Length: 239
Image (cartoon, rainbow, N blue to C red; front, side, top):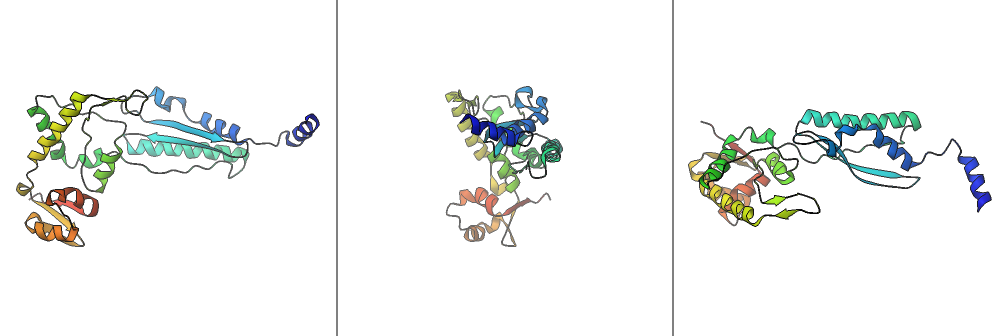
């Protein structure tokens, strides 16, 4: 009722700290020019994806992305500095930042394996297409596989307006992607390359393929590259 509300207001005057207001204040501390709507190409960004809360507790979720590792670390530092400012004003523990690492730039790995991109480029040329290589603001699977030991660049798959309400697939591009994959597979004559596999502290060449398949429990020898990338370390002899 009105009297109870007035008594409550008298008690909380200049004392109440609303978590919702604190969350908005925190967000306002982050640079506006780093929002995704103000970036393009390889420019990194800080993107708030969700806000939920009450007077007592509020949570905001962000995506931080950058092609440069140091610039990404700088953005993390910005987030932490904003939290420190909030805590200095409202008391320690008022704001906490939790960083959950996602994936890194696959280029760090692909730079060491130019022959991987070379296979895709040659296959595209044989298809009568001109290879175009550009950075993508994404690529979770390819990035994680690359850092697990399997260099895995992203190949175009016919999608447009990714992650949006009007995302679509182009049938012709999908068909071309299928042809591209087959051509790359045809060029992967593994018997002509000197690959060494390290598994269970033992090293094997492809001449030991039967022994390796037995250790990895691979039913189909054609799966050897993928299975080894997940479970073992791949190295190539440059001699």
